[in-house]
Image 1 (tube, rainbow, N blue to C red):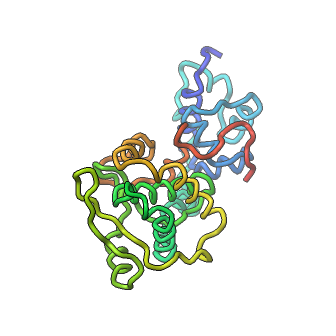
Image 2: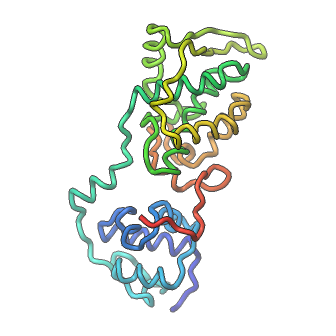
Image 3: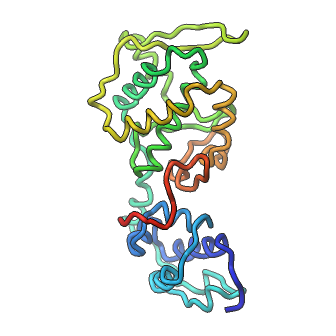
Length: 267
């Protein structure tokens, strides 16, 4: 072996080999018997690979350990390309969210029940609370909470179709919109006129929402906006584009809500 590679270099090589093999992160995680987020962390260089795992990877991905650790290593010369099957492509697209409008309305109502009375909770704070509820839940459970799509805009992540949903809820008498003066600035706020239907929220969903509310609902608009700008899914997305939920698996402290240590979850 010619070189002692860093975790990041090992992760990059594994990612290249996996892609050339036509495998998704979920495929590789299943064969290696660890969680998909752990594969993401390995490829990012945030988690090491022990000798047994590296041996298993060499058999799964079809490389020689000596070549892998060599300075002259190139993935394209090591693995024969295999085109992705339709099934594999579908598995990789599993993160494309399916928007649950009813769930979104109830999450919004629940947050407003808990936070509408706080003078700092205007539209800006509300948007960020919704974003962290959705992305924290996806990182923890690999399932969508509301499935809302968030676009990267200059002031932070903004859920799409929100204006339409809010106007429908106002027309239905579910919430009320009003303007206030907050430290010399005009602030748009909302009050819930009905209670959220908690039967629509699983215990795990409510727990994640409660954690976000406990952590962030007292933050000012400037504080929570600055915090969201440092969250990796927002940070690496081009302005104006939708933020990919899969990027939640690449978060680091203090944003990550999941333990990516060596006690792996088996799939």
